[in-house]
Length: 276
Image (cartoon, rainbow, N blue to C red; front, side, top):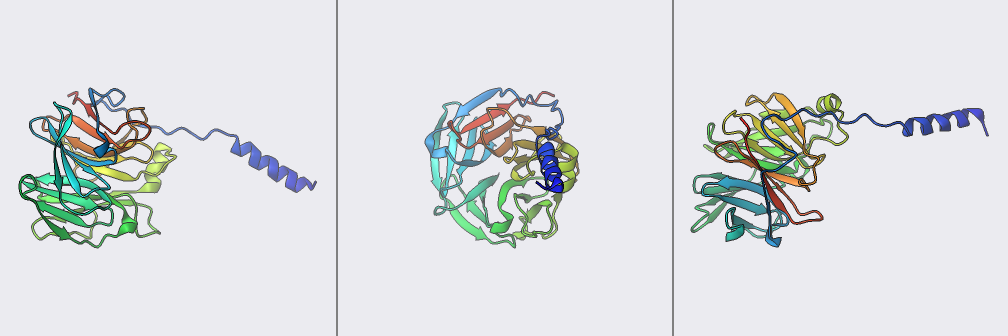
């Protein structure tokens, strides 16, 4: 055998056997992410739960990403109290609530406005410049700025690996083309030794700190940004409770809720008490 070939084969074998550096995450001091305060295992209608918003009176409104239905889930009784059809089947990824109006995000960037969703819902469709290639997965209503935050799992500009969060302005029902938050993939991956890309699957604003929290189902991570969009910390969600984290919400006192799609077990909602 040629000596050069033998050396090259040994070189590849040696480095392939070396352990890759482990991801290094920040410690979360305001939530004990390794131990939920409470766990709700969900019925089969919500096995593909993709979005959640905590309402008042111990209720949550949920979204199944395959059905054009909204589900009101009673956290106390642990059952579905109401099912609200708003559209035919589709790839619906997240929802947001403003008063009596629900907003639903489809993976191609289309936003559906479900007016008076609790009683006699009427659905209005809003197109945006985003497409299936952007794979929009996160939606949140920001009451301070009267806007929706739209988080993209992918980036249609293939040469740019950053992931973006845009704002949908409710005054004129349009999506601002300038991102309000940018996740620089190469910088983040390098800083935290990430094996998986940070790919947004949910987004919410903390009611007390006003920081922005972005969930990544890929790699099971949770990132915290300032209200201006500066990355503060990334936390690991690599625990058995987090089967496939897709939805995130806070209640008014700062308690954190994360929903997980079914993956070897029933879908669930996890609650983490705010420790400050």
